[in-house]
Amino acid sequence: MNAKFSTLAVALSLALGLPMGGNLHAEEAASIDAALNIDNKPPTSDENQCFARVSVPAVYRTEEIKTETRAEVSRFTITPAVFENGVETVITLPEHQSIEAVQPEIIERAETVEIFPASQQWVRGSLEGNQPITKGEMADIAASGVDVGNVEPGTCLVEHFSEATLQDIPTKILVSEATERLSVEEAVLKEDTVSVITKPEFTLLVEVPPTYNDGVEKIQIASATKQWKTDCGAVQQVDHMTGETLCLVDVAAQFKEIPTKVLDVPALITEVNKDAETESVKIQVLVSDAKEVREAVAEEFDSIDRQRISKPAQYSWLVKGQKPAFGAKATGRTACFVDRPAQMAEYTRKVVKTPGRFIAKTIAEETASVEIEQMVSAASKAPYKEPATFETVERKIKVSDAKIEWKPVLCQVNFSEDIISQVQEALVREGYEPGPIDGIMGRGTSNAISSYQKSNKLADGGLTIETLEKLGIKL
Image: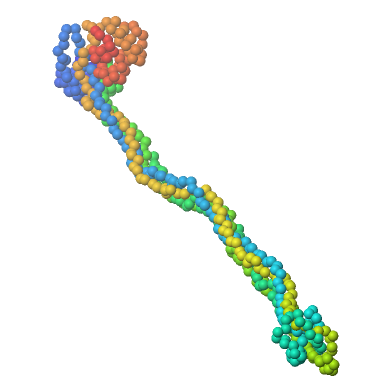
């Protein structure tokens, strides 16, 4: 048994309660080999090939663990309210009637009125006389042998005249017809203000995002195992034993803490009511429409005197030489039978040529345009699922335990300074410090080889052929 494994054997003897000192008995060595899982029979080899029992590290495989860091949550997609620009037409002046008064057209017209009718009569004096004779006088004339029924106008007789009594009779005459005077009461308007909705009331939907609490998920990334460890030190110094001590130690499982998000409060939708927006517009409101006003103008009259005979004239026809009646006067004129036209008087009368009238016309309404926003569609919400989030971590799972087995190694028969120099150069190239490159297997080179083997999960316990091949060195 080599020095290294002698020391290992002593350490295990102490652990197994075997006797120490001197050489181990065969059954004692077998017990140690069984505890170390060592095949005590070296493999068959070719000439100049060396083998040594070395520590082979445990073999692991790596698997990925998918861990949920945040659970699936419900969220909402919000579609805001949609508005489009529009125009609201406001009546600032309503349609109404306007009336114009056209006054009656009055003209003056000359009129005549009969103040004494036309007549044929006997008159005293001459043909221009105006003293009519009486019936008695006519009878007297007739009695005097005058055929008064056949007397031609213009015939004159000698007469005596007793003057007639006349009476003035007032007569009412129309000088201006009844009419009317037209006027207009204009339409009455008053100013007012109306409120126009430029943007209607609507509801704004706002999402309140979900909230989370911080959590931690503890993931096992490597299971607990046992590992052979060198330089662990013997329990006590053993005489005649030199070399490195190999101990089987427990390696605790490895864990990794992954920060997670735990849903505290799910997403919510908050409704915010938006008030309608308005704009004030000045308008005119019709209080009363225009009106026709008709004022009657009364007819006008005047008065004119007409003469009428209240007592007829008295005629007495005297025979020549006969004494006249009392009061009768000899006129010294002849009585004439005259054809006298009616006596007329002229006056001016106002006549309605064209009646008064009203002309009505329609005043068109006036409008103003106000820009507004009309809601086309209200805000809406649509639920959706926000998927869970995951984090993937690697976990090592042991496939086989560490063990001691026979491995081909570099030994005296194939050992050379050149090989050791190549090993030292390869270790430097791989980032390890073997010390000076001098071809000597010193402590620095041995430690660098051991570190390289552990880092690359190679068998540890000597310079194995496997290590040389890994370093790219050919024998």
